[in-house]
Image (cartoon, rainbow, N blue to C red; front, side, top):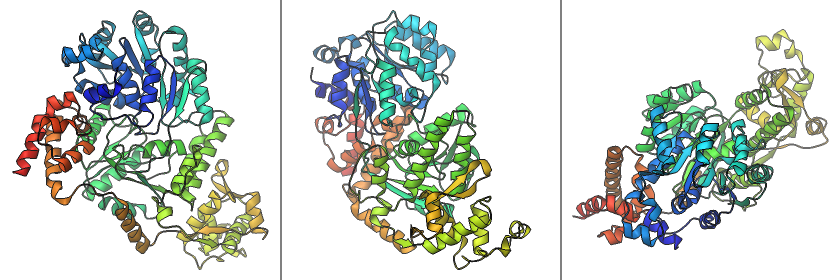
Length: 622
């Protein structure tokens, strides 16, 4: 069996991505595997391909409704069940001839009758690949029915949910550990985008008694530009960022439902097309917003973390965090939704102390045990250190996942390295104000004391009489806010959540206060001159492939794609990806044979869409 021929003729790809072929061969040989693939690295094909090839049926377990919808639409768009008999016979795929559809889905957003019909089709062999949630799978009725079937494979997606060591632990997932006993003949491949070493071993132990071959693909996404800015006047900065990217699709993540609504309203008033997405909106409204985002170019989604998991829109050009994420794992997963087509995409993270305190409170107010809370706080500490880092962002990010890399030369710190300045005296002023006020107040009050601002709170406690009052008046409040954050991120100050965010000095902070150690901080923000310089450097780093005269043709190809997508009621990328259309605009194929050489054009899609796209190309050339 020539896997690459099937890959091209069935899926339309000329070659496998790194790691895909190895995993596919393991699964076809009935070997358990745990694959840790970064978002956008092509993990879906690793189980879709063997699910098509294996003669029996396959079950994909996922918590993500969006992923189920998109992947079933994509698999069914391949029209494999309608492929000619000669192809099926020569590729050992004759078992596909009896299919009604290739893939089906069972989830809570489908009507009861739809779920029942899909289940019956799967039981009768009319559906080959079934997507289902762990809650619906692990019921006595479903399991008893499935025991009668020739099920080749149970795919566990988002496998970190199985492990208590994972950032996204879900108790329902632990029940999946029963599958190895209930279906000993089935192979159990598992996939996740983020899992440290402890999490990986825990997943393998629960799923397969540690018999899974663990494959970790590098976390580096070289096409993502990483940048971080303090959350000061951030809406103005956000507008500058978005104005440079008008007409491009992106996601803005916020901490709360209210904030997503405010951001959406703000951007729509500024002339952008933006939808709000969070769990407080109806399922119908969320689905409508998601469909618009997936189908139309230039849409921005303002969302909580309820949006994005399982979303497979290749041409998301930016991800902005308007609030601090919960952890490095969450941050990595969320930025991984950008640039899945391999083209350049930008990430921007705004961070501020208020968000940090909110995150700490969320951890402390949970019902989990102390060990869990300690681990979550340390994850948050790692993210804050990433934000405050003056070194290469990519290096800081990858080191968290145990990878070593050279400076990426493609992040804000690499292109415009921050200067480090000695700030021992300002640090002593701030730490002294903390000490003289009894370590009982938050950052805002301490800054008022240092700046010499006589608020009612300062005067009522007679803090305007302290020796440190006004000692830092030569600097602005904005300076002190960022300066204090660096004292916190460098471990010299702790935030006491249980005492309303009061600042406490640490041992290393005490060394600075009493002159036993010096303190260095990075300059606080990029000037407008440096911002322009950064933009120019980024532009020079882009690989220009598409000529200006080809842009009208690309625009016409996208219009046709959108028209076809609306007719078939599927996301536009299911017709062809942006990368495929760009290659068409550059190479301008003149026949169906030439079109087949374009990456992303397979035999089935050529038959369905080849003539229509050729007509656009030829009309353009006339």
